[in-house]
Image 1: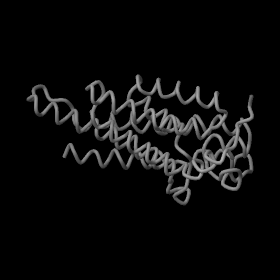
Image 2: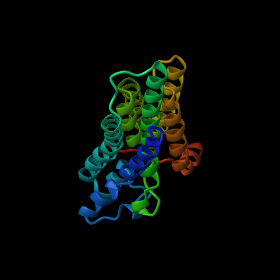
Image 3: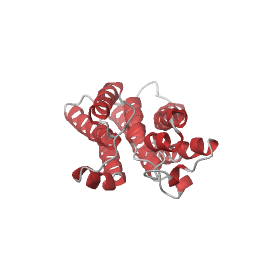
Image 4: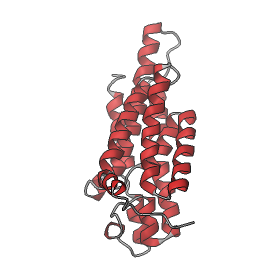
Length: 221
């Protein structure tokens, strides 16, 4: 029963991740974000579609939905499976592994839901903000480093897709290294693989534009 909860986590992650924040926010300003720029519903395209007033709530919403999914599943786990007064070492390990796998799948499917939302015809964003915030909810240490790396590379390159790539790569690499050293739970490697694959798939056209040096530049500065 406890392992079946991982499926619940995946469903919750996908459902919350699928909330098309950018689409709804831009509609408030009379703009269909899907007809502007890249057609994605993330913060960068919300900026192009309706300006900073739409980009800020989109970024916040895309961040919150991933983090909330993880925090909600963590809370539900302890509600549904309260820690018994006594349990063997094996039972404790199984319980911990099941919870961490549920959290990993929740986070991974939150990013997948953002990139391929069932509320938006299975289209969405690139997953950078959602990945960064979800990683922070899973591990403040890893998430903090990932956010610094992503923010620096966006500032340095002025290219949103480079920041998004870096967030996914850094999340995977750090969870892999730290899990090998037994600093973070092994299921978080699965999360790292999922978000890396999701971001790479979502940004496949951007990879080609980067190779051809035709990628859009952020012009805020």
